[in-house]
Length: 150
Image (cartoon, rainbow, N blue to C red):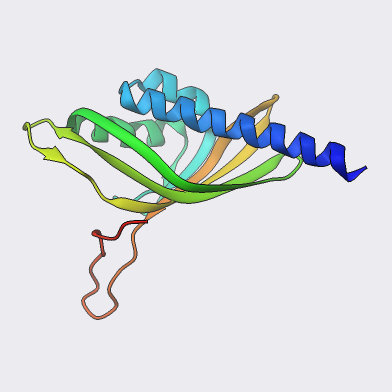
């Protein structure tokens, strides 16, 4: 009886990974309308830039719009992603990096951040309901540590 559940979880993990690939493709294309399909309307995002949270799809897309304006071309990659799937809830964690050529022509390798994605199955689709990107910080200086690699 546990085997069918395991197969189902593997299929659901594949569907979630597919959603993340769609997200990455739309990020690389700087396609806000395409990104809209991977986020829940009420997504809550804890990103590396202020404010402390971005609530709702409009706020999340404005955040990506600011990133797109900063880059002439960009790349996004996820590394070491682990996913845990429940019936209608799933989460994943790993490392993400936004890199590319800035609007001023300077190329940047970006920085690795800790990335967490929380999904909920809504009308049959796995949508991101929460995401978080963070960097560790040095307690003594209070500054983020941005030169770490996975």
